[in-house]
Length: 170
Image 1 (cartoon, rainbow, N blue to C red):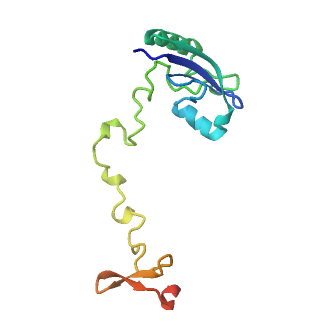
Image 2: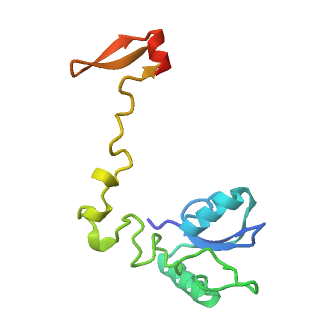
Image 3: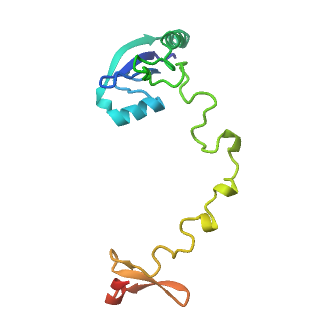
């Protein structure tokens, strides 16, 4: 069974930035999923998004053909207005695929070549490079007022002890 694919054009009514996309949901409720577009809505407000137009397709091939044609004609990736600002929030031409452009790995900060490898020794926070190096453990011997008790180290063993007035001054 083929689902209906809806292509849509959204526009932020304040900033005039546009987003071209596809969905199988209700295009008037669905805001879009592009990373740049979602960040723009987070900053400028999703309540200002309007749906400029929608076009429904029963065939994925027809939707793909229209989406690639529109992406190419409108140059949705590179087009800018007269103030040199992006006209579209799209980071790649619409191909009904979704996801990141090829070659961009958003999930691994060291790139796809290092995927699965350990963090390089220069980047590790060990020894003197660790911001906690040489500092005492966080709660050792400190008052924990929410419980009325405190941890203390007695003969190398960590134990609970009742809080007294001497503990409040340290």
